[in-house]
Image 1 (spheres, helix red, strand yellow):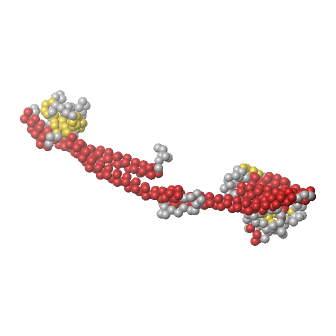
Image 2 (cartoon, helix red, strand yellow):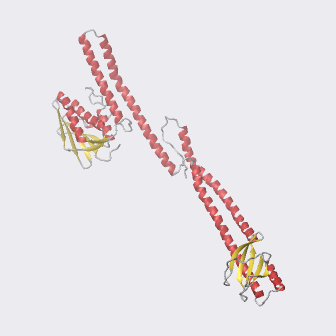
Length: 456
């Protein structure tokens, strides 16, 4: 039975009232059957009593005279006019009584009473067939008119069915009222959602709601809170992006205006170099902002995760950054203590994370320093350490460097998003990132990525 297009009220009414209706009808049929059973038992006892009375009257009579027949009729009529009789001899010839009562084609030969039904003059009778006690060649038949039984049974049934019908009607009313009362909080929730403005993401507050609806309300509140947090992140990202892009774009515009007014080739070249530097910083900032947006939870633009080799990624990106390290007079090395590191993740984001770490180390440590990228593992995790021998970061700033647009030093061309991106990507892969002190000096960026059960 398909109920997907019906209302919840209709489904509840159907499944609550339909079994009750079936049980009531079955109970009424059973009650009628039991009533008929006991009524037939009473009739059978009465027929046996009448047959025994007739048998006593004819037990010493070889022939049944008209006087005896009248006496039998008087005996039967003394009870009421519901019974008629017939007596047949051994040749099944009628010797007394009513000819309408016919012998069944097959009946018991023994003396035990035999009951059957017969229609006489359009009315149904229950007939008892019994052998005479002393005249075994004679068959006595007593028939009882069932009209009174049917009237009696119908009156009993109606006297029971009418109150039962009233009870069903009352039950339907209370079930309808109770379902409406139970669904009222759901209607309140529907009304609250319909009247709520799209910008309103505050939690729902239901008064005296049942436990099941509280669970639904809690799920909706969780969804609203998640949506609000996502919208807040987008708003914050847009505000940060607008704020951070305003300065380099304004500087780029100023440099181009100055270049347009420059007359000498040397001055024009210098202005164009400054324009190129500003454009490069703007491109770097835009790329960092896009990477940050893509790495945030809930982002729909991220690349799906695939199976990869983390050790190969570490070796390849370290080799790619060696020329940049040599240009900055930094010794860049790679220690992979894991030959193969299979991982299910986003290769583009992971590469961006480790490139940020190595580039930050190259950028902020003094010349002739060293940077080492180290890959190890334990039972459950892969561990990547990016260690340098620079001045390090004070403990008071180790948490703040993960904040967006935070820069410890205002020199250089950084935009303060590198470590924020690192943390977002690590958390996106169910991992963590931590800043530790190197020995004797320097900084270790400690990244832990679990081997299994990664978030999608």
